Structures are given as structure tokens and as C-alpha cells.
Image 1 (cartoon, rainbow, N blue to C red):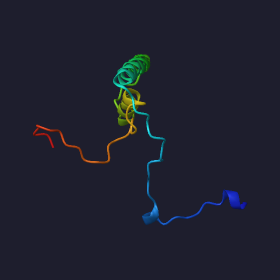
Image 2: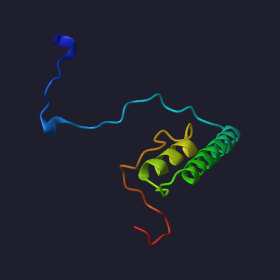
Image 3: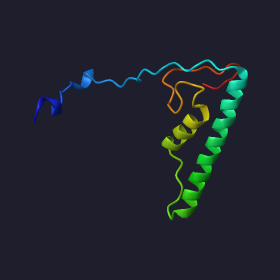
Length: 100
């Protein structure tokens, strides 16, 4: 085994998952935002049709999994929000709501 194939052992407490830094999304005008939302909606619709057709062709029952929800979210807000297709890792507040 040469040096390029050696794997460094890292203590478990030192392991962390971090979001890879990306280029910031460009600011969109209201018109560009509306166009991107419309394009994403059509892409999301197409993906839903694929999922439905795949499910209908399969003998197994359809299972709505977290991965599918995240994929549809990513398609929906791609090029609009930087964290498209990811679970939130921060708290949010819903104004004027009893929801917690």
C-alpha cells in the first residue's frame, strides 16, 4: 500500500459533518424569481409523474421516504435557496401561530 491509499484514523469525537462551501446564489429580480419558480414547478411535476409511473409499474407499494421529500424540495427551490434539498439545522419561528 503506498502513501496515497492510506486512510488516516480520526478519533470519533473529532469527526464532524460540515456543509461544503458553495458559491453564493446570485440575487434574482422579481421577474427572474418568478421564472425560476415556474421552471422548478414544471421540473417537480415531471419528477412526480416519474415517481407515480414507477410506482404503478412496481409490484411493491409506494413508500414516501424522506429522500423523496428532500429531492422534491431540492427541485422546488433549486437556484432560489442555497440549502435546497436539505433538512433545516436551525430553529424557525412561524409568526402569529401557536405552532412550535
